[in-house]
Amino acid sequence: MTETMNAWRRETYGPSSGVNLEQIPVPAPHRGEVLLKVRATSLNAGDVRLLLGDPLLVRPVFGLTRPKHPVRGMEVAGTVVAVGPDVVSAEIGEEVVGELVGGGGLAEYVRVPASRLVPIPPDITPEAASSLPIAAGTAWQALDLAGVGLRGGEAPRVLIIGASGGVGTFAVQLAALRGAEVWATCSVRNAPLVERLGAVRTFDHRVSPLSEIPAARFDAIVDIAGGMPLRELQRLVGHGGRVVLVTGDGGHVLGPIPRMLRAAVLSVGSRSIRPLAATPRPEVLAKLLELVADGRIVPVIEREYPFAEASAALAHLEAGHAVGKVVVRGSGV
Image 1 (cartoon, rainbow, N blue to C red):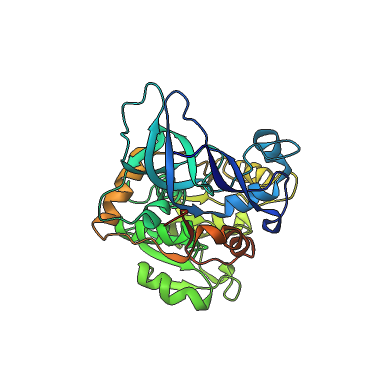
Image 2: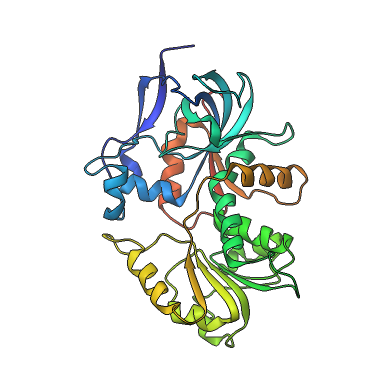
């Protein structure tokens, strides 16, 4: 194996135009880690936020004056090429997928804790597998927090706000799979796609305001788009219903914290509004891979970019309005 590799890096916070392809040393796996030859990396809105260092609140964790992880990409499918000490759950040559710590996917090789990895079934492509850990994992955890499919009784009516992005396209499919009647907001252009994924009704909340919907219409709301008045969301859920806030959007300094505090205040003694803090869940990822292998959910991949055009993939995501997932194939794939 070579001692150096290509990686797309930005040493300072800023837009994707400042990301450069550089030669850096191939990392060695530490205790409990494996080294992957990257086959595919899926990008998320969070990659853009971390690239920009926005909001400022994240910088004490991800780098105060410059990013601790100058290589973006947090969802990776790859081949195990080396294992560190005390690794018993992965073997050299195994095809795996998982969520990275901080980033590093837009490189030829990356090291990752073995505990975060799940084997890829042979009939799933690396591109499809790489789209699952964060996006589909977040959708799964949001529906769990909302109680969708976890209670008995009649099929719940669920509203998914912002249904055409990476998390949203999985949330629609998973909610429908759990027996929910899914309503979803998206642009008119994306409505046919969202309906094919399982929504029974779609509308653009910028054209048809949520205020036009009768009160207590839904059993659960999953807000991925953000920006909706919390009292309006609260009005739309019935007794015992729950609103789950997925988005991390907010101000440049504090990000979603003020909205989360307002949600906590509004939830005292009333219908619940719960912010979601999604975490890596390998056991959930394994279930998602089974659903993809069985054809019960389908990753929506809007664009695939070769490794040489990874900066263009970041720029496309940075421009906003990506539909489904954006994937960068590994070098040489």
